[in-house]
Image (cartoon, rainbow, N blue to C red):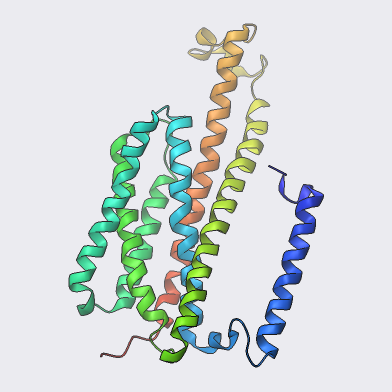
Length: 278
C-alpha cells in the first residue's frame, strides 16, 4: 500500500530492521548466554535445513494466497466454488502424510525430500502456462500434486535437519527452524504480491500503447466488427480485457519463479547427511 521504498516510512522501518539484525548477530556471537545460539549453524545439516525450511515456506503459502483472487477476479468463480477448487490441496497433503507415516522409514528421507520439491516445481511450471480459459481439472490436479509435495517435504526435512545435531540443542534449534519457515512464508507472500502488482502495472502500460485506431490489428475482423474505439462501452470492455491480461501475466511470472526456485534447490538435497539408523 505504501509502494515499498518510495515511502519514507518503509525506508525508516527497513533501516531499523537492518540495525536490529546487526545487533542480534553481534549479541548472539559475542554473548556467553545468547538468546539464540547461532553457533548451531556450524552443523551442516542444520544450516541446510534452515535454508530448505525458508524455501519451503516461500513455495507453499504464496500459491494458496494467489489462487483465490486469480480464480475469483480473473475467471469469475463464486467464492464457494473457489473454496471447493482449493480443497484438493489439503487432500493431497493428507494423502502424503498418511502414506509417509506407513512407509517413510523404509525410504531415504533425502529421496523423499527431492521428490517433494519436484512435486512443488512441476505443477508450478505447468501453471505458468495457464490462460484465462484454464479449466477446473487443471486447477485440481496441480493443487493435489502440490499438496502431496508439501506433505512429502515437511516430515523428512525435520528428520534431516536435526539428524546430526546434539540432542541437548534440539529444542532451541527447533524453535529457530519454525521461525525461519514462518518468515519464509511471510516474505514469499510479500514478494509474490509485489511481483503480481508491479508486473501487472508495467504490462498494462505496455499493452495500452497498442490500443489505438492506428493499430492495423483493429482494421481487420474480428476486432473491426466488435471493437468501436469511439464507443465508451467498447472502450470500457477493452480496458477490462487489457487489465485482465496484464494481471494474468503477473500471476504467471510468480508461478514460474516458484517453479525455478524449487528446481534450483534440488542439487542441495544430497549435501544433507542421512540420519543414522536408530
